[in-house]
Amino acid sequence: MPITQWENIYSKYSKIIFIIEIFKRGEGQVTKTSTDVLIVGGSAAGLSVANSTCVWYPDKKVTVVRNVPYTVVPCGIPYIYGTLNSVVKDKIPDEGYLDKGVNFIIGTVIDVDRNNKTAKLSDGSEISYEKLVIGTGSKPVMPPIKGINLKNVFPIEKDPDFLENLGATLEGIKDIVVIGGGFIGVEMAEQIKLKGDYNVTLLEALPRCLLAACEEEAGLKIEEQLEKLGVKVSTNKMAKSIVGTDKVEGVELATGEMLEADMVVLGIGAAPNVDLAEKIGLEVDKKMGIVVDEYMRTIDKDIFACGDCCTKFSIITGKPSAIRLASVATSEGLIVGSNLYSLNRKTRGAVGAFATRVGEVAVAAAGFTEKMANDNGCDYYLGEITAPDRHPGSLPGCTMETKVKLLFNKKNDRLIGGHVIGGFQAADMVNILALAIQQQVTADELAISQYATHPLLTGSPLVYQIMWAAENAIINKKK
Image (cartoon, rainbow, N blue to C red; front, top):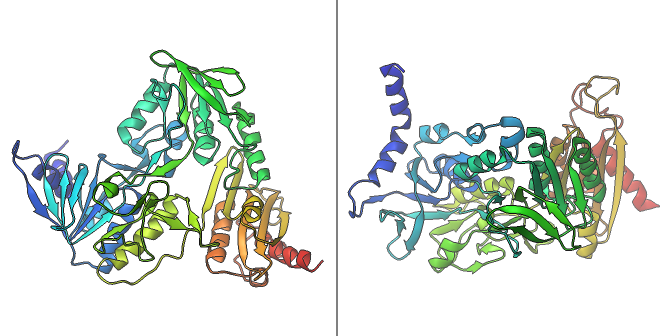
């Protein structure tokens, strides 16, 4: 490579290289530095805080400490294996943050002296701060079953080296069991099957995949697509133990059935990573996260928390919520960044908006399913419609059956749940519904709202699914 190109690279990355080297100097020597805003965690929440802080407080020095060499796109992890075929292609670039003046430190914060506002890193280095943000994210849920620590049992970690190892292990094996039929589980099952001629079995303890977020019919459509790809879907099945001596050889089910397995992928869920917060004396709920107020502050008013690691409440019920999504984390990051030196924003709670695509079908959901509404004692009415997502339907790329189902609270007519089954348009449609839930839009308001339509991009304005699902709900309520 020409010298000038090396010089350009060095210039581009000089900030991050400089910060890393500072903390490597002098064996046994404590290196001390300072920053205005110290962010612990470099994924969706931490990066969102960094962006927001640079906008709201451009004169403040921002430092992000992360324990990985680079940040992967969390929701892109399954696609590393069947579509991207590379971990580094799932990378969130540092360049834009470096250009804004954000400093990165590769390391781990192991302690914080809250009185002196100093954080200690694992290499003994110290960094002082004015404001501290904890965005330590979540950890994969590890079920308490025998054999969980055998070789070739992989939870889903956000560490590039870990993900590289998972990919390398896929080479030369045949039988793979994915435990968990939520979004990460169905996506991993699909992508591994696309990668090669593997025998893939997806286990889900509930009667249907995606049932924790979507209506049952959406899960059924996804299961059908997985089976078309050759994935064996086993619902109402629970893993009792993982069998093997040194590495996994099989999975024993609660029914006594034994599945052969060279690898097990765990997609069961995530728990808040509260270890640091608990160590430094912040208020913590181990199941729900670091306790924060409406401004995302902890009990220490100079320490904020956001993302998967902190507590949340439902925007619909006001009750505690275990929703952990990158979209929620980035929203909370924007709130935190704006509030660091002046309280400007409050969180309104988590709505929970989801989307995925498997094979030829996309499904998306926001807010309550019918089961959630019933479990929360909510009296509701609903409307739905199925229509093409192009007009006319003879246009190329049309999904002839794009279904929208909406749930409204009978007491106030506000939208509390929205579900879409169809093609690529599903995610954008559910984003409209997620916003409508947040803005407490009623059935009548949604029915007569105005939307952009185009033959190649949307369904017909005469049967635009969101409008007519709302209109049909109004008609159903009157019956």
